[in-house]
Length: 181
Image 1 (cartoon, one colour):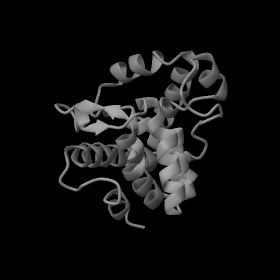
Image 2 (tube, rainbow, N blue to C red; image 1 turned 180 degrees about the horizontal axis):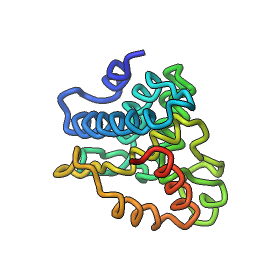
Image 3 (tube, helix red, strand yellow; image 1 turned 90 degrees about the horizontal axis):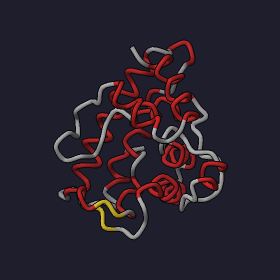
Image 4 (cartoon, helix red, strand yellow; image 1 turned 120 degrees about the vertical axis):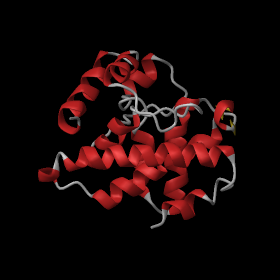
């Protein structure tokens, strides 16, 4: 599998959005692989982690995020399940789950209902070690044009995740203990 061949089916390689997506995803992949190295005893699939990290945000072109060139009709929170749909159609159902499950620190069906999120009412929680490490790594990088490759400090990441709720922060903190320094 070549993630870049899949991405160019949906993004113009010379576009602003492609640049943001690939730069962000490479940073996430690097951090996820570093985190996976800390749990070698769990036998994480490093090839899968790299592929899935490069594809985890494939659905962003379908959302409205003008600062990165995305002019779709959907809300940003929807990019995960929309990415899942894309990768399932491409024939990569396991990679597709990473797309859906990386948003926030995972989202439960109860949270979807409670916050009236515009996404399917189902659990979208990272389950496998590979899903967890990608979700964890993703929180350290934004898609802001001025700081694409700049890793956020842990205290800032924790504060952002805490904004999603105590359960989300507890989940992230468990991952930080596993994958972090």
